[in-house]
Amino acid sequence: MIIQVCYFARIREHLGLNEEHLSMPDGSSIEQVVDFLRLRGEPWSQVLAADQKILTAVNHEMSKGNRVLHNGDELAFFPPVTGG
Image (cartoon, rainbow, N blue to C red; front, side, top):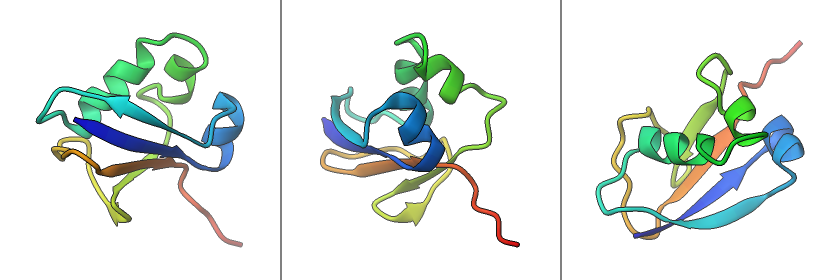
């Protein structure tokens, strides 16, 4: 399956990438995509480290790591937003 991955705010800045298309096995979850991206090494492993506060959305809907992705889905990574 092919998914579109979008990066926002500080994540985009650290990676130097707005979006990309990934080929993943059918039935892959968000967690599996994160693991795949971390295996690329720096800066991916640092930006997507388990201790980083990162939110995910699939097709503009907030989603947790165990959500299964489907062909054509858009997966977005972004930091929590705070106001003041």
